[in-house]
Image (cartoon, rainbow, N blue to C red; front, side):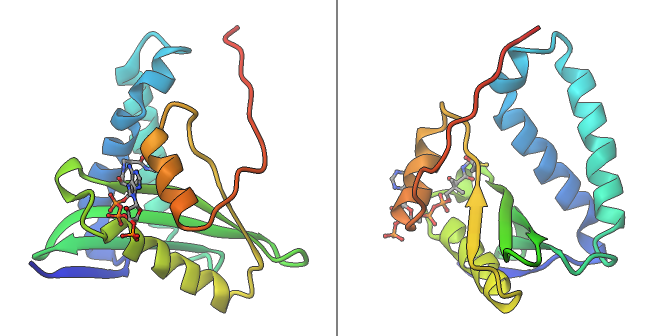
Length: 156
Ligand SMILES: CC(C)(COP(=O)(O)OP(=O)(O)OC[C@H]1O[C@@H](n2cnc3c(N)ncnc32)[C@H](O)[C@@H]1OP(=O)(O)O)[C@@H](O)C(=O)NCCC(=O)NCCS
């Protein structure tokens, strides 16, 4: 089995869109609380992901790394820097297909983003995890992240 982690390229468009939508589906129970039509969520998200992909070359503040097992795209991580004076970075999205989990690929993606943030002189890296996602919480805590805030929401 060969694992490859590399920066996203133009040829990854289809795979990136599919994996981004797979993350949305993974988080479906979060959206179901607020919206009745999940299909509409997927369509909006698809449009945003495509727009986002088309800007990947234009911002040095943004990084997306793709993960491949035996040349098959199985995951990605997306991060950005957001305060050049306070040197902050945000790990925005991380997703692996269910078959690819538990084999160290998430760790490799996180390492790639951490290295990229270090090059960008980031001193504080943040991320968010839904409260129900115990696995992701354990993954981040295992990698040295500490809980620092709690978010609240209310359906109107
Ligand atoms: C969370 C996720 C990215 C982790 O990636 P992964 O490839 O499965 O994790 P790895 O195999 O790289 O594990 C890395 C380390 O975290 C630990 N870990 C991973 N999942 C864990 C879990 N559920 N419970 C406890 N520890 C866990 C591993 O033991 C491993 O420790 P080690 O470095 O000492 O060997 C992946 O499971 C995933 O994509 N989940 C669905 C989407 C998601 O939840 N995304 C994150 C929130 S947006």
